[in-house]
Structure formats: structure tokens, C-alpha cells
Figure (cartoon, each protein chain N blue to C red):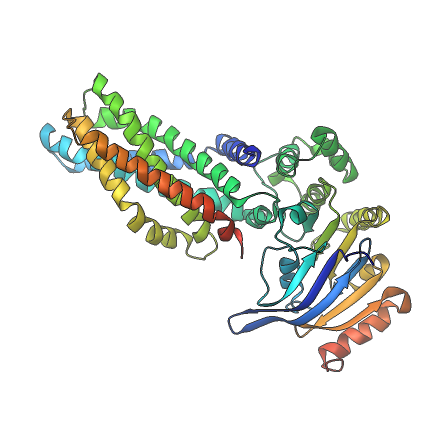
Length: 223
Length: 238
């Protein structure tokens, strides 16, 4: 049943590893954000801890937009989007394949950029930082589960990037805001009782977005 | 009588105020080779998109092997060749074909991939990225991709566009072979000579509707051309 999804995932990752187009562009873009903010604002460590979570997610989300746009732009080239519509498979399988490829690429990029972020903003590593792993996973999955289907909608239009931003931002905002809050708790070492319920809420949104997108993807592929 | 491979009943399609097709009806029996003739903008590609289930008609209905074109079982029996490649430039020929063979669940995929590559004379370039191929080679690989899962119905949308003489000759030979194998083929073209050489029947679309449906044996390219132009001028319109 997952054969199609795995085939699409393998194909996407093979193309990405060959060109490194998305990861490299996302990494350079995030690096620029960190450099600009680091040298523009001379702030105390306390203030830095306040703004660092937001800055990290700005880098993740803006770079993630590039990855999302790139994912279906590749399919639009040479009519492959039409080839997908012609495939004798459930549209949901195509969605799962695309979702996992975008998510894996984004998580790899996050793993590459996070050490740079730590160095730039002089943050101290501690065991408590491992709590960031579920936060980054949940936030990223929410962003990509919604972003994948909306990217497939936007790719049919001429102003793909503008439309994707317009559609995605209002819907994904709660997840990003909660992820920033959770990241702030971990980075400042002040993980309160609100941490796990909030993480659970992000997870619940992930499940809702993923399930709805899976069910609706067949309609997106039609002209 | 057996169920036709394709049945198009009173199909109309509009995109807002733009009319693409008006009340188009025809059927194609299994094993038949039918050419759809018409000028650019006549509605040929729209018709093929509706037949392949990618687009829905505004009115009317299409049946493939007696059922809806969007049925998964029908999609597995179908192949489309158009001016769009349906290939990934950043993958090699073999990677592209292996990807599609997994999607279409092709049995003995490795052997089948080698077979179709040999049919289109691309075995020697199988490990090269498709982005490095010439237009003709890309189109040959497109044909290999389409034939990979041995479809029962082939939809060809202007497949000769941009091909050199060698590639055209190869495609014609491949289509003749497919016809001999009993495949149903629907070809849209404005090349009357190729259409008459390959087809059993021809359908002329002018001004978004069918103006002529005839057998090739009854006629010749010049007669079809005369009908074609009189239809464009409005002569065959009722």
C-alpha cells in the first residue's frame, strides 16, 4: 500500500541529494538571517534568549517555504504533475510520499543549521536541550503537512509563491506560535507544566492537518 | 457486442466563457487505431485530458472499458504520450523507468526496463541524466516510459512535435507494432499523411465539435484535407 509513497520519497531524495538545491539554498538563507540579526542588534544574553526562539523559527519557516515551493516546482517541470494525476494510485499515497520527502529535507536542514544557531547566539548546550527534538519534529510536521497540500494547490497558478504564502500563513500560524513558545521554554531552561499539554496540542494539529490533506489530495491533482 | 474501449457521449467542456468542446460523441473499439485531426485550439488536447480522467467534462460522459476514466483500474490500462515528457531531468533514464515501473507495479521490472530501452535504442545512454538528452532522445524515452506497463489504450497527443526524421520513423514503427499487438490507439495530430498511414479511422474536430468521422480505407489524405479545410471554413458544420 505504501509502495507508491516510498517510490516518490526515494525519487525526491535521490534528486535532492544529487542537486542539493533545496538544502543548500535553505541553509544559506538561514545563515544570512542569523548573520544579519547577530550583527544588527547588540543585546544582552537575557534579551537574546527572549528573541532567539522566534529567530530560529523565522529561519526554519522562511527556508521551509523555499523547500515547499521547490518540491512541486520539480513536478511541474516536464508535465510530471499531470503524470501524477494519471497514475493508477490513491492520491493520498502521492501526498504521503511528497510529505515525507519535504519533511525529511527540512529536518536535515534544521539539523545542519541548529549548531550554527547555537554558536552565533552563544547558547549553552545542556541535556535539557533534547526536549527540543519533539518540539522541532512536531512544529516541522505541522508546517510540512499543511504546506505540502497547499503547495500542490499553488503550483497550478502563475503566482505560486505568493499564493502559497497567502494560503499557508493564516493556517499554520498557531503551530508556529506554539512551537516558538515551546522552543523558548527549552532554550531558557524554564520548562513549566504547560510544556507537555502545549506540545500535545501541536501534535493534535499535526494529526488533523495530515489526515485532512491525505483525504483531499485526490481532488487537488485534478485539473 | 463487446464493450467499446472508449465511449465519448455528448461531451462539452468550457473554461468560463471559453468553449473548448461542444457535444462531442464517438466511440473506439478495442484494437482500433483512430486519429483525431484538427487545427491548434480545436479542442483535441482538452478531449484527451477528459478521456484520460485528468479533467472532467462540463457536460456529457466518457467511459473507458465501460467505466469511469478516473477509476484506478482504468488508469493502469492507459498511457499518454504528449509533448510533455513526464520524465525527471535530474534522474537517469533507468532511474526514471524504474520509478514508473514501481508506480505501475510492472512485473519483472528490470527485464521490462531493458526491453523498452532497447526498443527505443537508448540502452547505451541508460545511465545518463535525462537532462543531457536531445529532444529526440527525450521523446524516445517518453515513449519507452509510456509502453513500460503494456497499456491497453494509448493516447497520443501530437507525439511527433519536435522530432527529427529518425525519431519519427522509430515512433511510427513502434506504433505499428503496438497496433499489431492489438492495442487501442487514439492519436491527435494535424499531420494527415501520418494519420492515414497509421489509422483505421479518422475524426475531424473543427470549431470544437466533430465534423467528420470516417474510415481511412474509404479515402486518401487529399480527400481528408479537402474535408478538413471545408470544415474549418464552416462548410461541414450543420
